[in-house]
Amino acid sequence: MASIFSKIISGEIPSHKIAEDDRFLAFLDINPLVKGHTLVIPKKEIDYVFELPDDLLSDLVIFAKKVALKIEKVMPCERIGLSIIGLEVPHTHIHLIPINSVSDMNFAKAKLNLSDEELANIADQIRKA
Image 1: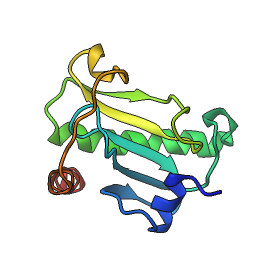
Image 2: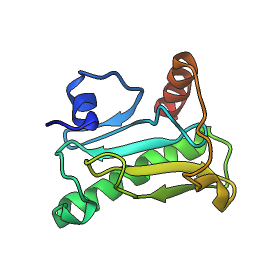
Image 3: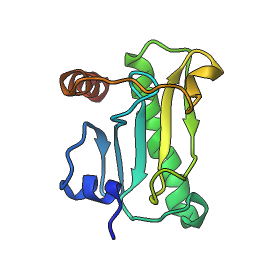
Image 4: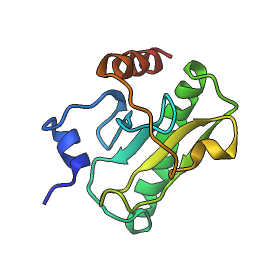
């Protein structure tokens, strides 16, 4: 069965896209820890990050870097934190999170509840960066 991310890739489920090419997609997390929290995924559905072929893994990180630099231009933060947990969705994904302290990456804390309009505005700002 296709993961929720594969359904986002195919357009079955809408998303707020930040960047996309033939192999990767970056979009806003709909349950973000902070504004600008973005997910970066390979379009090929592979569950575990360490099962990715080396070239796909390295290119995924390079793609994520380009997205992170755009996020950093728009979202007030000290850095962009990167996290790969891999338990929530059986499809490799990188969390890019604007941070000012390590506690900003605490996945146990309450998530933000942003409107679709606010997510669309954030995505638009990042895309334009």
